[in-house]
Image 1: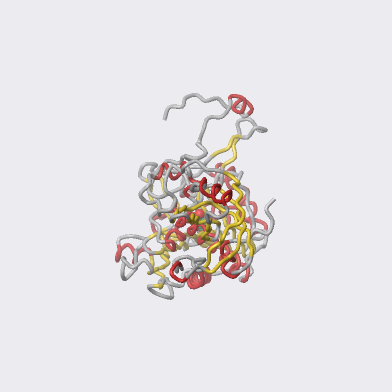
Image 2: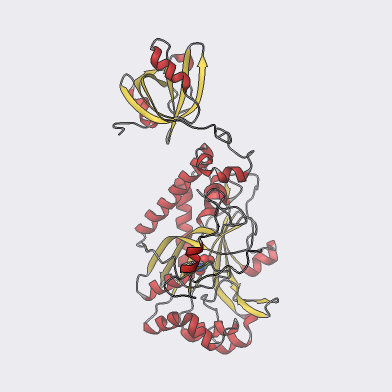
Length: 467
Ligand code: ASP
């Protein structure tokens, strides 16, 4: 048991006192007869000093190697003037060590962890992610991520939102991607789907009367390798009742403006209020629905937020020869004329909005259809037969027959936003344990085979493992 250990951030205030510190050997420097060790803990570095006078202790210090874990006791001393290091928080002090306990030894790490890591192959970094995370840059990214999430929770709490968890084992929700499915042991031949988002649950929470819901939600989408994506990612999932589109956009604008002002005050907004640009105007003017509106694209501190609004409700899928929802089928069409929706889907606009920052889509949302007959018409346009609609979405249609409030929401992604704040080139740098572009976890080695016994229990047979 280690008692009364203090962290490096407290040590500077204790000149003249005896303290106990624990952590990793960061670097060892031998200067003539004196051994200096930089001890690293979660808050930073502290310099330890070993003098040859105490022979036994000195010998022990001689054996120390990088990444060994040690516990030391000693006196905090002001450093001599010329030895002050203004670059670190504890640069004015050092510990004259009196006791050293080696808690564990370490093999030589497979790569240097004192650099920013960008020169090291990513496969290696992912395989030894627990070592990669010792790196200052990655540690700071995760601290930043935590600050953003904590801030969101508190801010939304003050706005009367409550956080509610929704299931991970659930049923397919159409968000336009393939589902990850989980076989049921108790019901042979049946499967759960992992949620592509909590979309239907959050709408059902509105039927339940919560009015203001949010969740830091994990979403799962089995998509082909395309750019900087992850099979699982995190969203700030949010839903409200009785709010207009503009009220939802205003809420998100205030939240994000406050996050930036409080957590990254060195960042500047290109424009406030964040512009609302119609999809048509964005396409005509910028040729994209996620325009990068920064004035100076070389400025790492510029944030250009905007909302893209008024998207078409449907788009034609030539390969499948059918209409699909641009956002998702729960989006409310801007027309309530069922005939028009069915006859001229190409003309129908949706109450859909995207949240864009520096050319990245960082979130999307919509007002939802709450009239069952319109929802059915939308599904029909998308090529679903009446019976299929009942089978797949009967629960939602039924729920809507018990008093449903007009509702709408949004789901800004956490990973991409933190990536932009941190100035990182991809989202893997701000996720503790990301997967490779092709969905593998190189550290845990997943996906992997399972035992024959497990397959049997699940009533499954592998017919082929060819790709
Ligand atoms: N469920 C949507 C998504 O994940 C967001 C929303 O409509 O609230 O993109």
